[in-house]
Image (cartoon, rainbow, N blue to C red; front, top):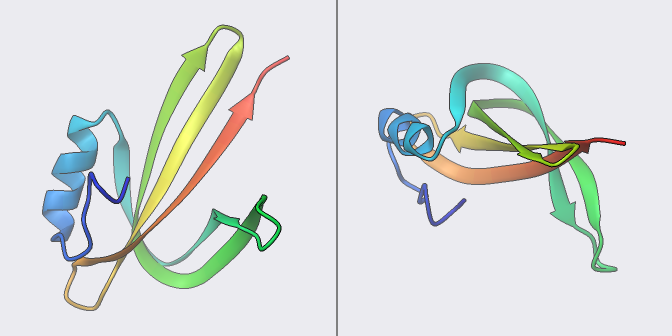
Length: 94
């Protein structure tokens, strides 16, 4: 994801890049995003990021009976540029 939208990218360019990759995005002001972050043990844990301005981007894939949603938060700085990219994956299936 960071390769697709590098830090420093303007918000409008970030939306265009993510749309080309099949994501739908909306802008969130003073919101919350729960990212999957590596733990010291090497697992993934949920970490909440509160009161951030970001582009919330989502894309859903279907793998047989399993539906996987890949989500990204392109965290914005005060000038409307991407300063950080947060991600998470969620799946639903039998």
